[in-house]
Structure formats: C-alpha cells, structure tokens
Image (tube, rainbow, N blue to C red):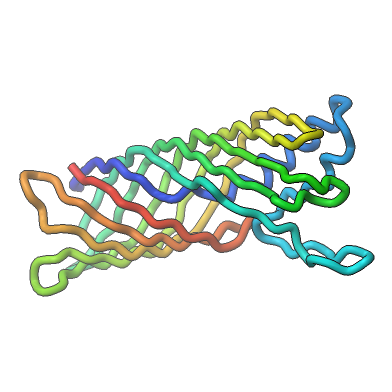
Length: 214
C-alpha cells in the first residue's frame, strides 16, 4: 500500500449544523433563557417552514458569509485491478461557517447571526477509478463512504439573544468524488475535488476542495 499526505482547503460541512444549533437552543432555554429562541429553526438549511398564518415567506431566509474548512489528510492506496484502487483515509480539520437570518425567525423579527466553529475528524474508504486526460493530466472518480465526528462551538446573537454552546455529533455518509490534478513536480502536486455527500440525518451536500499532495 502506498501512503501520501494532503493539506486542503474546502468549503465547510453543513451536516453537523442542525444538531449543534438544536443543542444550543435547548440548553439556552433549559437554563432559563427566553423561549423565543425556540423560534429559530435548527433545520433552516434544509427544510421549508410552514407559511405564517397571515401569509408570507414559507421558509426562514438565510445568508452565508463564510464557509471554509482547512486540515490534513493521510491516505493509503492499494491497486485492486487495472485503474481501480482502494483508498483508506484519516483526516483532521477545522471549519468555520457564518450565517445570518436577515429577517429573523418567528417573533424574533430582527436579524440573527449564527456562527459555528468546528474541530472534526473523519475516517473514509473509497473505490477510485484513475485515468488521465491528454496523456498527462490525472483525473479520478471515487465512490465510497465514511464517518465524520464533529466538535462544534455555536454562537447565536441578536439584539435580544446571546447563546453560547458546545456540542459533539457523529455522522455517517456516502460520497461521490470527482478529482483532477496537476502532473507531479518535485514530489508534490496540486488537485481540485468536487465531493457530493449524502448524510442519513441531513441529506445531500456538496463541497469544493483544493489540496496539495506530498
């Protein structure tokens, strides 16, 4: 088996957001905070909201001002047959995501800022098909799955709310990866990856990644 290391920058994961936000709201209300916090939907990223009684938007609108995840990955690869390879990976990463609900939520009509800071670890297994474009540009397609463990610090701020909470969650996923790399130079190469994931408790997500391989 051949081993390599990668440093990467990619868009942040979103699958841990619902559980982290739900834990923050429940802890805040349970410790005597305003029950108005329960009007913030923990699933604002994925689920349509019921229409208001007097009409209006069917969901809480949000804006994302930051989404990035940086880290390192150790990958072991073994040939199965021809261009097919098995790859196992272990990864550590730090992610940042900032969201704003400009119109608030429920009775909270003023803007709400929600921030997540996440330390995560992943284990993955993938079957990869490798080929090359124009005879020299490596490309790959991989199908696999893995487990993500996320330790998340959540902050919620508005004119009437100040919530701080820490939560951890473990999520399984399946993935489909499309990659392209530069030809190796001096033992390193640069790659770009589009990864599509599906989480049982969150649904589909997509992430773009740039990585440097050693």
